Image 1 (cartoon, one colour):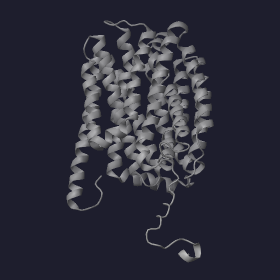
Image 2: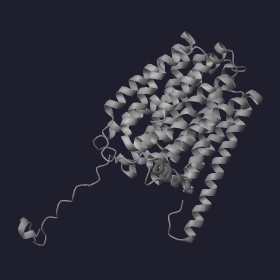
Image 3: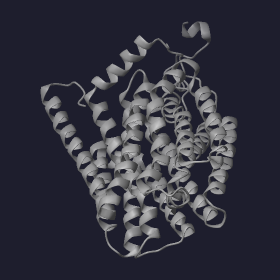
Image 4: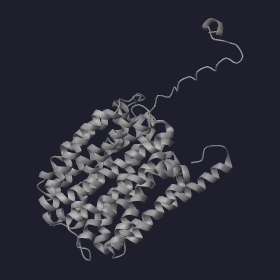
Amino acid sequence: MSPASTGASTRVGAASPVPAPDSDSRLTPGGPGYRRMSLALFLAGVATFALLYSTQALLPLISGEFGVAASEASWTVAAATGGLALFVLPMSALSERFGRRTVMTASLAVAVTVGMLVPFAPSLGALVVLRAVQGAALAGLPASAQAYLAEEVRPKALVTAIGLFVAGNSVGGMSGRVITGWVAQEWGWRISVGVIGALAVACAVAFRLLLPAPKHFAAGSLRPRVLLGTVRGHLADPLLRRLYAIGALFMTVFGGVYTVIGYRLTSAPFGLPQGIVGSIFLVYLVGTVSASTAGRLVGRFGRRGSLYLAGGTTAGGLLLSLTPSLPLVLLGLVLITAGFFAGHAVASSAVSKTATRGRAQASALYQSAYYIGSSVGSTVGALAFHADGWTGTVGVGLLAILGVVTITVLGSRAARVAARRGPVAAH
């Protein structure tokens, strides 16, 4: 329509037209709905990690009640993370069809229901089965949450948003272990996991009430051929393959360390009571900070530089934890936790930014690798502890970090080669 027909002035010096409003309706920090979304997914992360690792700080007590070694009791952790790893891809496919919020809500509902049954497990075998079912139910959370964020949050705010979700994971892991430690010291491990179940119920209800309805979700297909084609496409991407391996290796370290640390601290030369051992997990607060600042870390050092820093910090913590001094062991745990959560936040956000289609499947593959790493770490770390004490567990962790550094170096070389060949974006 012409200026004359609208009455707009055409005189030189007339006031400039009002800029068109921002057409991007996705969430951004400070904008409407962003705080509700952040809090909702933060609480979902709390519930997920509190349930997933609810038995980890209690393994010495579980070993005592059922008369089993650390390597057998560790299956109560490995079964949960293994169940999640196996079901995260199918659950991500359901979220493509039925929506992220719907799948996350259903997953939490089933997981908290199973959580209220866990305290009544009559045997170690029954406990492991319940934990596997609980892990499978929780599989609907991680990949769906990252896909929701990739669709509903502006790209510049994505690393920060995912960092806040990962921070919720760290708070859940910390609170679950601290609460179970002190409750178990007074009333036993069964009451303590029941308390965690009740906490998760409260988080699940708040999550559903707070999470904004998605505005940018487009339903996909449940046809197996379409799903397999999407998965093959992601696995063919060399950058995504490297990120999946990095997530698995970081989690191998973390799963091994925190599965075994209770046995070390309750034994000589430390001999700490269960409540104090549970309080050790307050170092997860460091992970909350490092995960939530991952965006600034990438802005300053780049993705690969941030991964080197995270890997080096984790390795330094592992070496420091070998000392017989409790303060130095605690400092080592602080460094391990900070390095792990920073590396996880950087790698997982890179997956969400790299995948332009089938984001739920891309995130699901990362989560599957990540929790396979947790299962491997908790099992192999416990076996190494049984064979060679804490030194064996640290050795497993250092090998995993060496893998992280090697993969990152290979990625840097591949990027330089791609840059020399032409303007195609380097992976």
